[in-house]
Figure: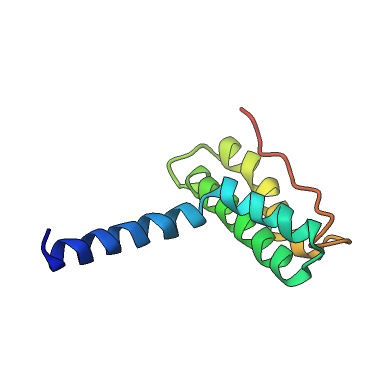
Length: 102
């Protein structure tokens, strides 16, 4: 393999690792570890990353092509996610809101 192929492979591996690190299940494991270690800074960071992922997942539920009823199901859930850092006990004791079911 040429040097260029090794560089391309290394870039692809780095990109895959970065994407894996941002997967919600990986973030949840890291959040749990930070809580176990009582690392407030990391726990808050991972809690916010998880929250942001959950908000990203529900962005589609507020699109203009969705019914008003459908959008109204998700608005309280999304607001509860945005309010997580205001919860008493954050970042170690978080009551995660339940996503709506249709």
